[in-house]
Length: 111
Image (cartoon, rainbow, N blue to C red; front, side):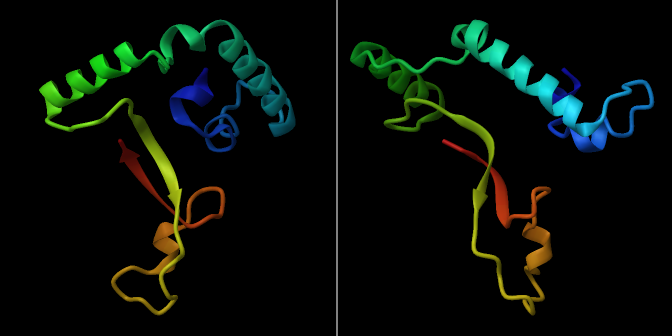
């Protein structure tokens, strides 16, 4: 569960002296927990209707509350891949956009 709160087992669990697991062990445990969440829990909380009436209701709520037309769902904080700026760009140096996985991206909220 620590991974889901922090998003990185290598940084947070690797520093935990009480864990006693190597990265490979944590990866196997994480894979199993994610499988169980996906099979037994996620469908209760993460839903996307294909019913046109339900989608219309969602669109209406987004418009009434936030004045955004035509919205049927949200994605919270995701990395969007980008082409890095030139290495000599003083205002936006490329290393600023390097994520923890070694890819260039912008972390943003998207609707």
